[in-house]
Image (cartoon, rainbow, N blue to C red):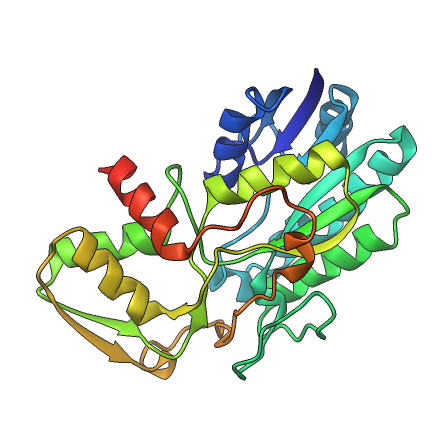
Length: 279
């Protein structure tokens, strides 16, 4: 039984991965704040020494705050990844790292593959892309999995924010010009475990099957939850924020489809299952 060190293991993805690791034949060891800090080299060395495989779900993800908290954002998303990759290389450990659709700033309707040129719109995406580059140049055995629009039981996400807003207001405005694939972290965890089992290497995009706007996703959630509120579509510019969001997050997942032993679920199917389980 291999030992997985899951860095950032208390978050949405990390907790789902830890839950599914046992049935997949792995022992999960969770590392997270406050006891574990990925920016401390001693903590990283200790985590690596305890594991056969390293999974990095730790990240600074406060997209708007990143524009002003630049140093801490880069420390977590870039410099810590560089250290992690160096130690993984030294100890001969396989590393799987999570990245994001925010490395792109595309506004077309094309499907974005791993070969498309990243162009981040803000500091968060820039630090995640720089972290990817450090890892790719480190020489350690690794896979990078870019995910998008994730939601899960153990954290704040688009669904929880929408439901909170619906409980407080009779009218809701949701952006209709951002397109992507809402993706359940349980599905991401399943894909990661398969990559880990194969020790696949390279850059991969993973998302649920199908695309929708944020507004269309909100419509689906409200219908499934039987919530009757006035819902209106608006432009991203109607919600000024320190950091711009990518308008196009349509992932081309054909590369990972050629490896996985399961078919990626439709976003509607996974979300319906999640909503039922979340209650």
